[in-house]
Length: 58
Image (cartoon, rainbow, N blue to C red; front, side):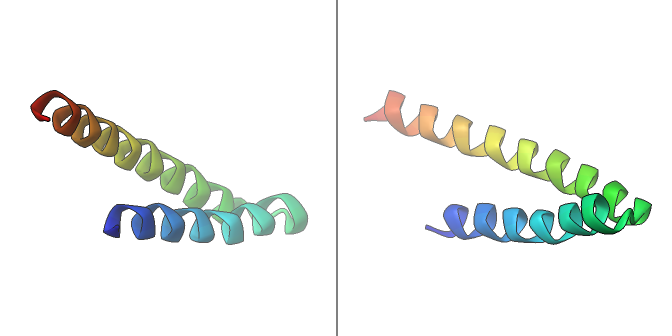
């Protein structure tokens, strides 16, 4: 279940920076949010591959 925790942590960090960007106009928070979204995309792809491997080997 550590993958679920990883996703939750990324989303919670992203939420904070998105609020700062959209509500307060903090451009640095927008940059951080874009990086976090890229990290989330990468993690999602890794999880997808793990699921596919487990499904194929079952």
